[in-house]
Structure formats: structure tokens, C-alpha cells
Image 1 (cartoon, rainbow, N blue to C red):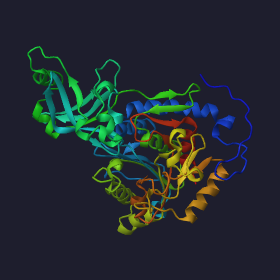
Image 2: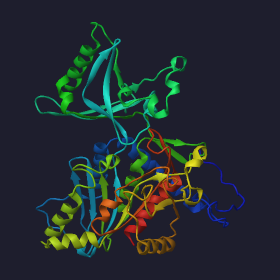
Image 3: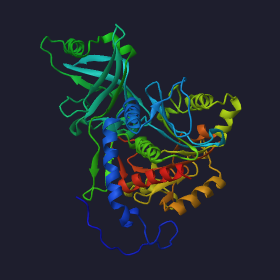
Image 4: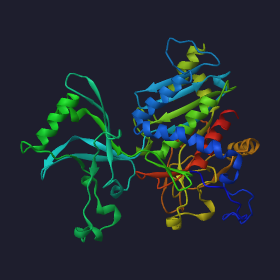
Amino acid sequence: MRRKRTKTANRQNERTGIPLETKTIWRETEQIDAIYDFSEGYKEFLNAAKTERLAARAIVEKAKAHGFEEFSEKKTVSRGDKLYVLNKEKSVLLFRIGEDIEAGMRIVAAHIDSPRLDIKANPLYEEENLALLKTHYYGGIKKYQWTTIPLAIHGVIFNKKGEKIEVNIGSDREDPIFTVTDLLPHLSKEQNKKTLAEGITGENLNVLFGHKDANDDVKAEILALLKEKYDIEEKDFEIAELEVVPAFEARDLGLDRSMIGAYGQDDRVCAYAAMEALFAAEDPEKTCVAVFADKEEIGSVGNTSMSARYLENAVAEILYAMGKDSHMAVKRALARSTVLSADVTAAVDPNYKDVMDAKNAARLGEGVCLMKYTGARGKSGTNDANAEFLSALRMHFSKEGIRWQVGEMGKVDQGGGGTVAFILAETGADVVDLGTALLSMHGPFEVASKADIYSTYRAYESFLRM
């Protein structure tokens, strides 16, 4: 059901006091159908991409369907080629080859990991007739938000024969689910005296995994089931890669179905928009690249993160396949590029307005959000975009009719956050953060406006044609 559009009085912009003819994208009626239609594919992507491995797989599958081929060191490359590079099954690069890579590329870089719980190396134990799994949280979470919700487990585990077994339990509707328990209100007198950060500790985030004890040994029963279903043993957990994520699906939110509520929208909302934008970038003059990185939520460290050199290496390999064997060609290609760091930011929440600077905050429905800088407090850990690049973007977006807004991650001394922008800027490229504003960011159930999701896609697609 879509809400009927009604005429509303023209209001003033809260930041400038200047009346606006169209305050939100929803009043641009010619886009309404496209906004709703785009969100359907996005929800399907979210449901298929709950971990970085699953997201990478979904991106590659969609790329293949759009005619992309895996890049091979033996392959010759020419303009018009559509290539993908899969890095260790956790990060992906998509290329649409233009005329001269050395002259610079258009790059949109998102990340596909999200806050979650990871299963520890020795997780399984039995207590009070219950089997539980110990976890270690990944990324910035509010620990209490992960209790009393339905959870699924995804990942890979190798048995002693070296066989790789994929684990997927809880996301299909017929599957069992899991949960982390919490204390009932009747017995929470002491817990209620603690701060939100202290009420649930990291070591409390133990996943309820089983209960049946026909032989008075719950753990043995669970291990027997694991052996039967997956041919794995307890020792195999030591080298496993298992992630605990919310089990629920992406859903339309609001009576007017104007929003999407789901897990992992940070940053798969920008990843999906970047992917679809690259698919739409037919025969670009400049080479267009979409980057889908891992490990952003823990500081972009590791060989699948933006700090790893797989982008640089892939550009070098492609240049070599085009007949250019030059270290300088790679450096020039990256330094002459323009980059959108495609990551989310926080939108103003009416329940928590006091943490935001109202004159410099993003709002749902007002379009993709441009952040000149992110970082914390004194701009620590940020890329501070150059005014010349911002001017070029503004002029282009104006020409293309792209609705956008500016925003910051809360008041200056309140906190802050980072993105991959500063890493890409180290190559000499012009970089700015541009992404979707969310409510309940980093929670297990984040909220985005369908209007902003579509605006993000349009901005990325337009940038690739810039």
C-alpha cells in the first residue's frame, strides 16, 4: 500500500530558514514509481547478503548476469570490457574499461561487512541443561541490542579432511533460529543500576544453541547433530569462520511503505547502489570501478580490507593486459582518479535530536548525503575533501537534477566515525564521502528512506558518467 500524496504547505529549511519548493524527494512525484521499484531489488540483495562472503557472492552472480567476466592474468583487455575480481571470497572489484586508464578512473568504493557477533575458536559449552556458543562481537555495537532477537549463523568451517563446509542456519523460514538471552525485568534490580554499556557485557553475548538432553549430555547431543549434518567435530571450530547475524528479512517499514528496515544497511545500501550504478554505466569514456571492501567496521585492516592493495594490483594487471607495463602508469591512474567513498551516515532521529547539530545534519527523504569530512572530534582519521572537487560535483549534480544534502556525524564533541575515504586519498585521488543517511545505524535493524536509497543510486550513476 502506498500513501496517497497530498498537498502540503511550503515549509522553511530548518538550517537556512529559506523556503523550499520541494523539501523532500517524495514531493518530486515523477520519481515515486522508480523509488519503490528500485527498493524491491535492494531488499532481495539484503536478504541474500547478510555476511561479506554472501554479499561478495551475490555481487559476482549479478555481475555475471550483466555480462561481466572474471579477470585473468592471461586475458587481453580493451575498451568496453566488463571485468570482475573476487578477492578471497570477501571483497570484489567491478571494472568497466574506458579509453585510457592512465588518465584516471571514476571509482565508487563501498564496504560489505557489517557489525555482528563472531563465534569464538572454542565456543561450545553446556550449562544448566543448555548448550551455548561463546562469541566475540565485531565492529561497533550496542551489546544490549543483540539480546532477545532471532539470530542466524552463516560462514564456513573445514573438517579434518580439509573439506570446506558452508554453514547457513536460521535465515530460511523453515530453519531453527538462535538467540542471546537477557534477564527478566522482575530480577533486574542490580542490572538496572548499570549503564547501558555495562548492562550486557561482551562475555554475556552467548548464543543459545540447544537444549535436548536425552542422554543427560546436551553438548554431546549437539556435537552428534553437527557430525550428522555437517560432518564436523568440536576441534573444527578452532579454524572456523562463523558469523551470527539477525535472522529476520528486510521489510517495508511505515504504513506508507516509504522506508526499509533491515540488518546490514551499513553499508550494503551504498554497495547495492554502487553495483547497480556500474551496471547502468554503458560504454563509459573513463574507466569505471566499483569497490566492495571488507573489514571497514574494524578499521580497514587485513588482506580483504581497503588497506590491502588488491585494487592497486588489479589496476596494474589490467594495464599490463592492455600493453602498459609501468609502475608509473599505475600511480598515475590512481592519482588522476576521482572517488566517491560510498558509506552511510546518521540521520536526525526525533527521539535523540540533542546529539546532532541541526544546521549540519542529514534528514531522511532529502537525498544522498555529502560529507566533506568524517572522523572524530578534531577531524581525526578523516579525508577532508578539496573544495575544487566539491564544486565540480555540485555543478554536475545540479545539471543532472540530483537531490543531495550535506551532513555530519553528530555534534563535534559527541563522537564521530570513519570511512575508507582517507585510504583511497593516499593515492592522490580526489575523494569525498557520499552515501545514505540511516536511523538506528549499527543496530541489528537499521532504517533507510526508499527515496534516499534511490537518490544514492542516481548520484553514483551520474558520477560515473561525469
